[in-house]
Length: 418
Image (cartoon, rainbow, N blue to C red):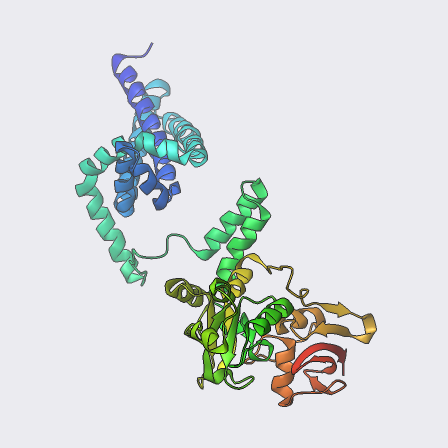
């Protein structure tokens, strides 16, 4: 029969193992709650505010948990050893205590509580936040000593103490979006938009703009009927107005078709010129995100893109930017999406508007990079002249033959291995 002292030791041992499980699970739960989530919980009640306080000084909180957990584990081992020696003797007592305490602490004090905390971190963290908050205040003097020693060791090894490192990275968000898609929480289209946001926002506007050669302009002698005809033929809602055809470097303004519709009667050319809006200019090096922010701030849907010499290289619309984020937006006026068609051993037929990147992927050939985004732009940049149908050049081991021209724009090409 156990003596009163042995009963007390057994109770202390049980309390130590229970405390070990509580502290181990608390550590896992605390570090599993994102700070953004803790901030949301803080707005819902006192426990949430305690949790946010613990995460604000995460280093001190973890230090407190480790100090307390190691203390109860060492105490459990000591009590178990004393109890085992009293029950089975000094020969086998220490061995029995070591085996028993190690097994029990591993299962009850580590694996089980940490698994539970991983599955329900919010609920677990809120449940223990009040107790941990008081515990950190009690053990703060002891914890501070160990934290200071830890920091000194980290400095010796050149480890930065930067507390402002990114809590959530781009890779984290992409991974969460992928997991959400797999679990069915978000749609594939939503995940693709998230990916597009990261891929597109840093891309320069010259890669998404409408190139100069494809811009439809209006002259100063414009009439309402001519504008209506242009709208029917092109489907655009805004047109640059220039003094001389194609002279975009001296743009007089931008005509918004909506302004024409609001004008009563049949306005004269002079009245139409009064409707012109001051064009917004963006450097070609600006990112898509910067351009989108500028257009929103200026409440404009149209901008001219300038090259390094101040000349107009292309135009940019809100539709261009949104299409990059959510995919190509086609309406009844838009031409078909540019494609490259494989002819097997005979090569490829490609639209001049196909991107250089897409053609490189289709052909498996690394095409040269430059101040252009399309295959037509690549051809013009290398040749230096406006080609005629039938002209051909060799680029990176591929022969590009012009099959059809649309004015001064390359509409269709044949691509073959040279």
